Amino acid sequence: MAFVPLVPIGDPLPRLVDERTASEQRAALGALEARLRDRRREVEAGWGPSYIERVHKKGKLTARERLARLADPGARCYEVGTFVNYGEVFPGDQRSPAAGIVTAFAPVSGRWCMVIANDNTVASGAWWPRTPEKIQRAQMMALRLRLPTIYLVDCSGLFLPEQSKSFPGARGAGHIFKMNSLLSAQGVPQIAGVFGDCIAGGGYMPIISDRVYMTEQAYMVIAGAALIKGAKSQKITSLDIGGPEVHVHASGCADVRVPDDDTLLACIRRDVARLPSSGAGFYRGDLGALDPRFPAGELAGLLPVDHREAYDATQVLARLVDQSLFWEVMPDVGEEMICGVGRVAGLYAGFVINRQGLVGDPDDPSRQRPGGILYRAGIAKISAFSRACNDDGLPLIWLQDISGFDIGHQAEAHGLLAYGSSLIYTNSTNTTPMFTVLLRKASGAGYYAMSGLPYDPVVQLSTCLSRLSVMEGRTLAIAAFNTKLDDDFQIMATDPAERARIEAGMRETEARIEGDMDPFVAARQLDTDEIVELGELRGYLAALVEMTYQATGYRRVKNPRIWSLHDLRVLTGGAGGPR
Image (cartoon, rainbow, N blue to C red; front, side):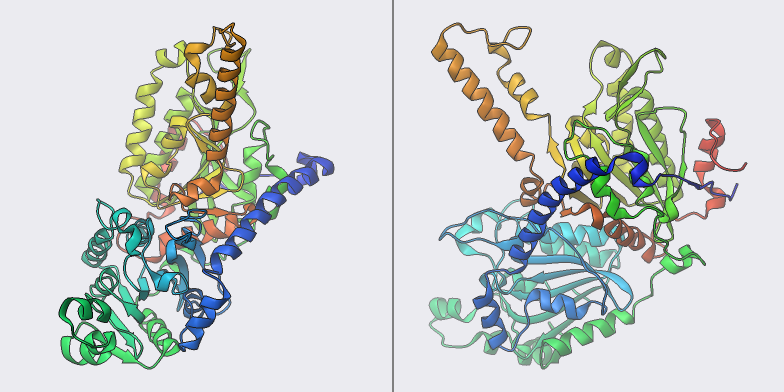
């Protein structure tokens, strides 16, 4: 029973697509990913060179420079929320790249941490609309994975012209401090470094941390000098009010004063090194992280940009899992879904992916039906698999390319509403970490059922090909104008002017919906956590899976001898490897 029947999957790319097709697909995707890289560079520049120079003239580092020096040398940090507020214009023709806050998974002293750093090149690290939600999203990721949380604070408080969009409400700025409290209550280490401005809400954010450092340029105040001058006619500096002399030596609101940014970052690294080391090595055993037999970079030639074109979903898995070894669970039912177990960076994880193209119809073996849709058997299969992964403590990765649920008389007669409800209940109550990737289509209730963001995966990633919507633009336009169309979806009006208005309205609706499907729209609104290149996907997943195994003792990670997945295999008569 302890044997996990991993078997080789996948084929070399030339067997799957001809060179011309692969080249065309790489070129089409390359244009989209070049746009992604350009926009990342734009966001990373903050408000530009003059503001970076202003920070440096103060003897300080920028947020991303601090992150780079805090992280282990040569290691990659995985940013999330890069494109929050991207393209938004605020009063005074101002923009807030990344909502003025950098949130990233970073390896520090050999341990994955969540780093939350105010971008001091953007309005002195002010909180814009959606900044609080982005901070809280990062805090929730840290809470779910029990990651040490590091705050690099350099914050001038709320961006006041837009305070009504960031101060009140259930997820307003004050909720950050509740998240501080929940992290503390769950024993998640929090360390704060205060590098400069720390006003109002920015002053509250570090206080609940287990350790608070301040540089000589830093101050923490409920109200800054300018406000006190206006309210009380007192001429006093913010450093006098709440600098390290006050908070380290008098109030006790901070623990240690240090001379500069580099010293503070070194202190944080030392503190993280004192924490328990990662449990990933224990769960990995003697196995190292082994690359897939087929490079992850080949995904660019495998996935068509046109969402109507099919591909072999097994080949995607073969380019994500170690050595391209995979155990497919329950392969003989629910053909439209593939679920199973593979290793990522030497650690076991569960995978669910939509099969594309045509699949068999169990009710009529002479017929085929489209994949990328949830039918009864597939729903029951992935629901049982999701429960088993939760029971066994396996992190679960959902790879979405889905058009939605089956519809029509037969679907209703099969009780898809009830089966779908069972899957939604399962994914809503799972406690094992789940991660969702929108490969291409993420449509309708299928997006929900496969652990879309409303069902609280720890992280949701989108590729440059992803399309998130209720339905496709043309279909939605038909639905919106349905009362003006006949049974064949043709315009009923005979008046030329009326027909022209309806046609223009349908075209406008279709174009708007197609535009809204752009992954940058979802990322701007916090409807997805990050947009990644296909070639980066394995790296992101490897980091996330390792994070799930880092902290020991807070969830049940079973050894493979007692997996309930083995029971599923026997009960369904599944093959796959020696018995």
